[in-house]
Image (cartoon, rainbow, N blue to C red; front, side, top):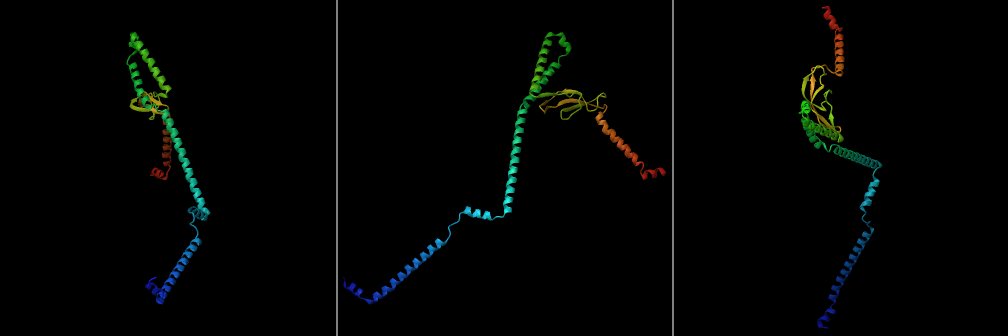
Length: 253
């Protein structure tokens, strides 16, 4: 031990200065311990974080019954609309499928009509006199006639049928008027000549029949009845007007 150490140990002033420092440290440590203890107690007393789903369920449970009924009605309406739309889509798909199956040969059938027309034009170009005088022409015509019948049978097998227009009343859904003819023996609007045969595929028009229509003949009986009744009504109306006071005044004058 050095003489300086001995002097410091025996110095009363140094001992007095050291005691306040120790007391300050003790007080600070006690304050920190108390603060930590209070924080721990607060954490223990604080409730755990609530589950978001439980919170939402609790809020839903507090909603009025009317709100739930409105939600159920809205969902039911949406469900019914979705089912109806699904049913419409299903029916539309079935109809499209059926139409595709029935009318898949439309373009091919329309082109084959030209072949049939040319075949009949070839047959019509030979008169009966030439067929009688030439055996070779007769044989050719027999072959053409058989081919024409086979083509027509094939058309009918696939649902292609001719439109019987001759002598029928003009129908704009099936006929195409090319000209009008004066024919007093036929009612006006009657087909009197077929320029080109028309065809239908199943229940759909494939090609309209090109026809000539009569004009100037007697009107159809069905069309005469409404006009006759209208004429009678107009005549009776004029007769009633003659009995009005104005008409009687004219007679007196």
